Every structure is written in structure tokens, then in C-alpha cells.
Image 1 (cartoon, rainbow, N blue to C red):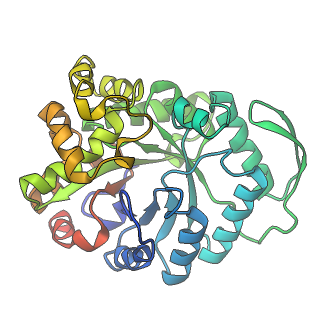
Image 2: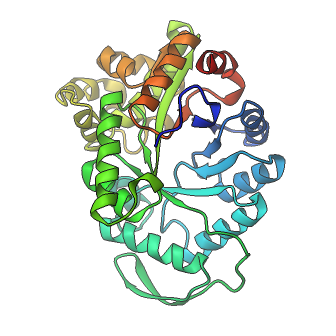
Length: 348
């Protein structure tokens, strides 16, 4: 069952949201999240400044109670031995507070890094390999996830292996999350209705696999922009939306699960600034530039897929996402240091 609304433990927040050049501030942000009573700090891995193992280890030693999770890392970017070793070491360092959030990403990303695209079966097999290694077992595997003749961790700490969460949008991936993972991370810019449908799909997948659906946790990611000027709000919310909707196929998937007209994306992507972009737009433009580009998106998409306006209005939106069936909200866009007024309204 979802955590009752009004409880700050039903909320988590990203540290270092977006592009950063100084990762050191993540520790202070994590400490503030714990001080505010948030349940989880989330690390969005970005290679160069936001390494999961380094940041997670630092945060684990600077905090005492808050959980730590990736949102998200990727199977196969790290060898299974390296990934499971990092996860178990993190679990031991944190006193059992770590969760591993993974995603399948998109085809162009895998092509760019020279790795095969992540298939559904590879996702499932990677999770099984990870669990076996974390439990101290031996892996002999040859399949879609790779070829591993003989894998085993040399030393396994006496802690429970960290749960694995799967980032999902579409029905097939939601079903896989319900059948094979410990929870699901829902993508930003889903409406509350889309979250409600996603929760149903995950629970149905768990039931079909003979699992207890109440043991799975649903984490809904919501971009939150409280008490900002119109230009600031557009940069935070609109700029983040551009990075998702500009990706071919991915943008269509996100719009379709919300029941929106995907034809709007043709007009949006016709802007000169987006012509010929490969990869993510936030690697090329500032937040303000992305905010201007987002003016070509329907205003409804930003209003119904995020929490914007006053701190009170943002708090109400968080309540609505919890009422839609989410167990915890992952606050994106606003760092923990800026959430005080919103949390006061949320807890009132």
C-alpha cells in the first residue's frame, strides 16, 4: 500500500539534478535531505561528475538514516563483477541503505558506447546474474547479457543484497518490473492518470508471476519547481522536458502513455536549435536556452506532468501523485535545500 500522504518519508529527492561541474555539494544536499526527513537521496549517474560508486560511498558516510539509490545506472556499463562488488560494498558501508536503480536507455546510447542494445531478456538475465553474485553464488552464463564462463565475488559482506529497481514507461517494461524486479522507477512528466495505469500494470505483472504485489515499491519521479519566476520555471521544467521529448521514439512513447497527441512532437522538433542533434540536448545548451525551446511544447504537457507554481500548489501535486498509487515521490529539479516551504505545506 502507498505511504499515507502528509508523511515526509513518502518523499525522496535527487542530489545534483541536471548538469554539474562540482560534485562535492552532493554531500551537503544529502545531509539536508536527511535533516528534512526525506526517505531517499537519488543519484542520477552522469559520467565525469556523478559516479554512483564514489558519490554513494561519500553520502553513506555523511548520513545515517536516509536511503541511497541510483536513478538510474545501467547494466553492462560495468562488468557484472564490478557492479555487484560495488553494490555489496555500498550496502555494507551504508548499513543496508542502498538500492540499485537501473534502466534500459535507448538504442542510440548503446550504439554510441559500442555495446549491444539492452533487450528485455538481457534485462532479466542481468538482474539474475547480479542477485546470484550478491548472494555469494557462482555464475556461468552465455546469453544476451554476454558471456561469463565463471564469476564469483571473492568476499561477500554479511548484509542483505540491495534491491533492484527498474526504470520503466511502456507496458512491456512495466510488466518486466512487476515480474522480475523489486520495484519500479517511473519516468518524469507522467500525469497522475498515467501513474495510476503504471501502478496497475506493475502489480498485474507481479500477480501473474505469483509474487505478492504489495512487496513491490513504485517510485514516481516528479519535476518540482516551487515559487519560481516564469522564466526560472520554464528553465527548470521546460528545459528538463526538452531533453526527453527531443529524443526520437522515446518522446513518442512518453507522450503516448499520457494520452497526448504525438503529432505535436513534429512541430517541436522542427525548431532550428534541435536540428541534427545526436544524444541529449542538455549536453549542448544551457537551461535557459532549453527553456526557450520548450515554448514549442504544449503548455498542458508541462502543467499536467510536473509540480509547478507556489510551494502550496507543488505540495498538493505531490499528494495527488501519492493518491494515484505511488509509494514514494522522487523530487527532481529542485535540490533538497530549496524544498523547505514545499514540505511545510506537504506536512500540514
